[in-house]
Length: 457
View 1 (tube, rainbow, N blue to C red):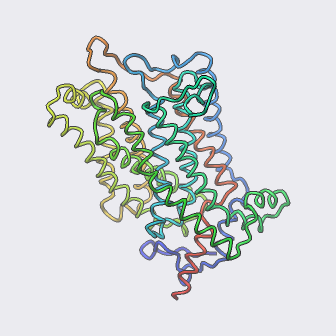
View 2 (view 1 turned 60 degrees about the vertical axis):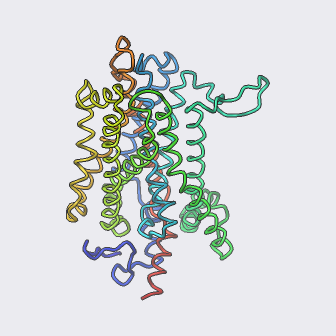
View 3 (view 1 turned 120 degrees about the vertical axis):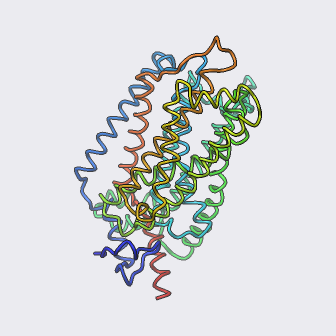
C-alpha cells in the first residue's frame, strides 16, 4: 500500500522513493474503485438522494409543459428569473474543468494531472444542467430546433443578432469540444479497465469504448497529437463562451447591464465559481475514496491560490461597476448601483460581498489554505455567493427600470426552487455514476509522471 507522507513534504508530482508508487500500484489503486469496490452505503445514500432530485426536476419540467412558464415567478418587468440565473451559474461552474485540463496542460502545469479527469467530468455535467434552462425559457421548447440554421421550405433563418442564438452556438461548441477532450483522455484508462475487468460483460463494454486501444507507439503518437489539438481548441473557449454569456447582458440598454466590463468580469467569475465547486466536491470525495496520495494537500493549496487570485479580479469588477456608475454621471446607472446596495434586495447584495470578497481572505495564511475544513467552508461560501451575484445582476436591473409605474418585485415560486434543486440532483447523480464506473484520476498520466520522476532518480 502507498504510505501517507506529511503535508509539508507533499509535492505536485508523486515521488516513488518516498511514496512507493509504481505503475502497478497506481493501476491497482485507481482501477479498484470502478472494478472491485462494492457499492458502499455512502454511494447508495448519495445516489438515491440525488436521484430524488432528478425526479423533482422531471416533475417540475412536466408541470411546466402542462401550464407554461407562468408557473415560474417571472413577470413584468422581471422577464428573466431563475432560469437565466441558474444558466449562468452552471456554465460558470463548468469553466474550471476546461481551465485545469486545457490551459494548464498547455502551460505544462503537472499538478493538474491528479484532478483533470474529475474536473473534465464536472464540466460536462454542469453544461448538461445549464443547457436545460434556455430550452425551458423558450416557452415552446418543442421548437428549439428553430434556433439552428438549417434549410427549410419557408426559407427562415435564426436571428443572429439575438443573444439566444449566440448561446446555442457557444454552449453546443463548448459541450462538443469538452466531451471529445474528456473521452479522448479516457481511452488509455478504458483499455486498462478492459484488461483488468473480471467479467465478460465489463470486458466487452470497456473494450467497446476503448476503441481497440493497444498502447503501441502509433496509438500513443496519435493520442498525444489529438489531445494537444483538442486542448488548443478548448483553451479559447474558456474566454469565448462566458464572454458571450456576458454579452447577453451587455448588449441590452438597461442600466446595470450595458457595460463593456461584463465579458472579462464574467470569465473571471466563471473560473472563480468553477474552482470553488471543484474544491467543494474534491475535499470530501478524496477522503471517502482514500485518494489523499493522488489529490494531495498541495493540490488543494494551489487551487486555493487560484481561487484567491480570481476572487480579487471579481472584486475589481464589483468596484469597477460602482466607479463607472459614479464617473459617467448617468442618473439611471447611479440609481441601479445605489438600489443594489440599499434597495429591497440589499441583504442579497451584502451577502454576496461577504461570500465573494471577505470569505476568500481567510486563505492568506498557509495553514488555513492547507486546512481542509476551512477550505471547504470558503469554497461553499463562494459557490453560494456566485449564485447570489447572478441573481443580483439579473433581477435588480429588471425590477426597477426606466418607468417607475412598471416597477415590481421578483419572487421565485415553488417550481423555481424545485427546478433548481432538481438540476443539482442531476449533477450529483451523474457525478456518482462517473465515480462508480470510470476512474476518477487519470492512470495513464499518473504513470507518466512517476516514470518521469524515476528517470531522474
